[in-house]
Length: 254
Image (tube, rainbow, N blue to C red; front, side, top):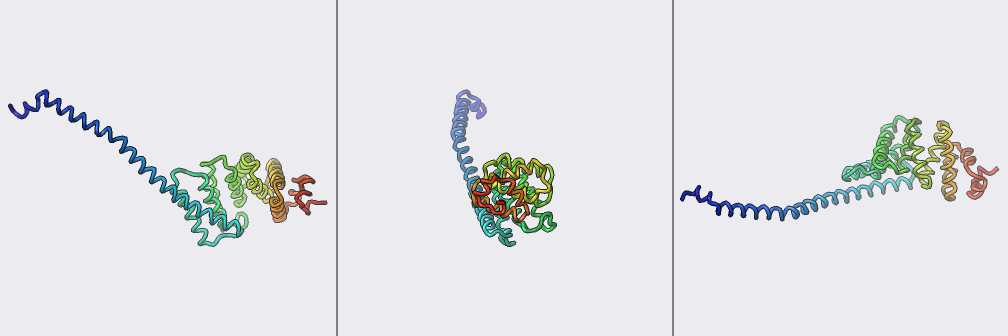
């Protein structure tokens, strides 16, 4: 009998079929294990990236906290380190994240923030802050602090347009009892008072009242802003006599 005839025998084909079936079953049994290993590897890599992103975010936030306490523009070296850390945190994170984008926007806002409004020397950093806040809002549209910061960026650029109006309105609507938001809106309103429409002025007065009602420190901070911007009258007219007396705002006492 020839070899070809032997291979064509029914028994031979049956044994070949059984062997093939066993091989397929072995492969199928190992597929879940392979998928689990692959998934574990992907999760491990993502976890490593997120850990590094978290470290970079912490580093950038530490710089911002230090600048807040000092109240002055950061050095060029400090700003570059914070900027690189904030960008690294965004790059390493797997998705667009409003918190990380907002942090980068704040770092841009700190660069040359002592420059006068609409100063040509500060246009680049202020425009970068504006664009970054826009991206942060696209990723997290319900966060009032970013809306307030976007409005502040428009103030620094002296752009009192529909975007400024929307940012003020959204921050006011989304953060009615967030004192940080109300303080920033009051400051923006005092600074931009001549450019505000009546609705924006009413909102500024309400943010002022809410901030002063929160505590003495907030009321004194408002007084400092009002003195710097020449808006003592706006401050006083925004508060009741009882609140003025409670917070001991001497310039408002007649």
